[in-house]
Length: 97
Length: 152
Image 1 (tube, each protein chain N blue to C red):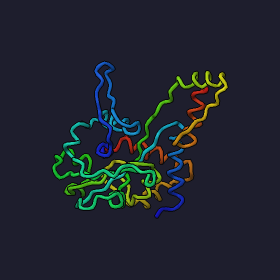
Image 2 (cartoon, helix red, strand yellow):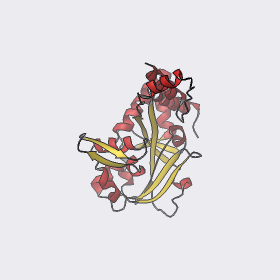
Image 3 (cartoon, each protein chain N blue to C red):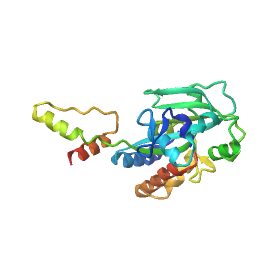
């Protein structure tokens, strides 16, 4: 339905927010005249885009010393995240400093 | 705010800390707290717009949705949530999720004052035509501000 222009447009803002370690959600809605079909397929179509909501999920600063102690003990730390890679990089940078 | 009815997190005021907090998952808690701070009485929305159905988040859809009954919602509240032309509509679907996935399901977009909606492609086109990527970035920042300020 939308061209690559829209993708660039959205990815730019999402990246911009994600780089600052914001968690970004989109909110959309639509009025419905009847509620006989409330399936995801019906409810999640033909929507009005309301906007983006960005929130902060602060890093746990106590993780830094813990990782250091683990590293000194010869334990390798692995980071697993469902977030964007730039969130991960920002987090690591903030914890490192 | 519209997302209020799409959030499962519950609000509580911490008397000791003198601040709002919420119980629920970490993505939804800030949403209900922000709505309360923006002047919406979160606790009352359950009664204004009871939920008829929740379609829970799934990793295949990257979004969740609820269908709510707004037929008994007081008009002064409804007018803050609905566009004028939708005031008589009894139900609504509210969706939140991963931005790129949600946008693909949208056909129109709220104006920055939240009082009208325009065709999605045209609204995007207009912003994009304002300039190159730098301009787009500024537009996006405005869009984001809109999202936080718009009367949802």
